[in-house]
Amino acid sequence: MSRLNSVKSAVAPVPNSPFLKLTLAGIGTTLLFIVFFWYNGTFERTGNSLTLFFSQKTSSYGLILKNTLIKGRSKTTMKEIFDALQVSPSDPLVTLDLETAYTNLKQLPWVKEVVIERRWPDTLYITLTERKPMALWQHNQKIHLIDQGGSEIPSQPIETHMNLPLVIGEGAPQFTQDLLEALDQTPALKKLVTAAIRVGNRRWNLKLQNNLTILLPEDNLAQSLASLDRLEKEMHVFEKAKTTIDLRIPKKMVLV
Image (cartoon, rainbow, N blue to C red; front, side, top):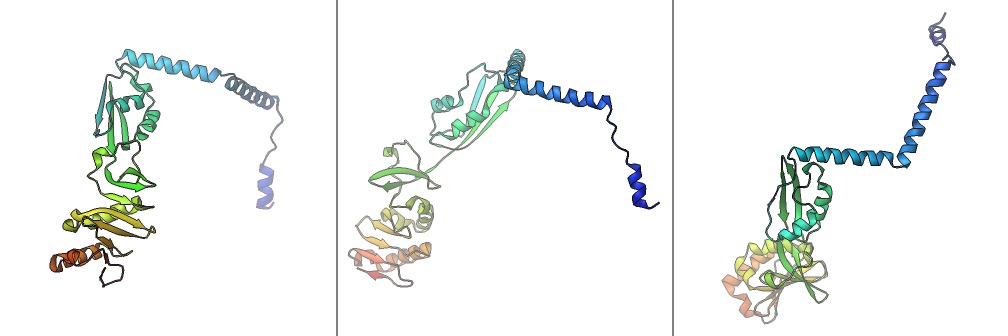
């Protein structure tokens, strides 16, 4: 007998026994009961009852909210935080809906990142990372406060941030941080800048205190500003130009 025939003869047919029929019938009945209880809400009610029982038990052991500690808060008010948390003292700590609290806190104007922790037996610990205002953005005849990522900080008065740089034009927020980092390398020049205008979403014009306009190139921004700063110190080019200094042509400066 070949090996193949030997293997075939070793496989016995599955008996069509009454026990097997009863087993299959039992499985089918069980599935029907599961579907029935699922649709009529029995499982949900049972789960709610268990959750309530568990909350009551943990509360009886002192696992309730007594302290809420908040780290990193500067501009976000306590009222905003507690309105977002939607918790009250003596709530069972184990059943606090931290996912909803996290989502609500993330929606607050100044909140960039948030971490929420239960610290047993009775404390909710919240760590906030707030957004840092970077500049004022003038767009469509309105002025907006923007953060270091170039995103608008909504519903915030600008009166307390008038010392921030002013940028103007479509697409300006996304490129403001690069411009300010370049200007930081030339602090004397930076002090003279009253506004930065984004032109064609490609490059910047700088407006100085004496109404002089600096036309910057698309590339090598830091290098161009450093050259301008050096020439101003050596040759006083700001006094020689009447309206404009054009730096758009590499290695050339045009005074108008």
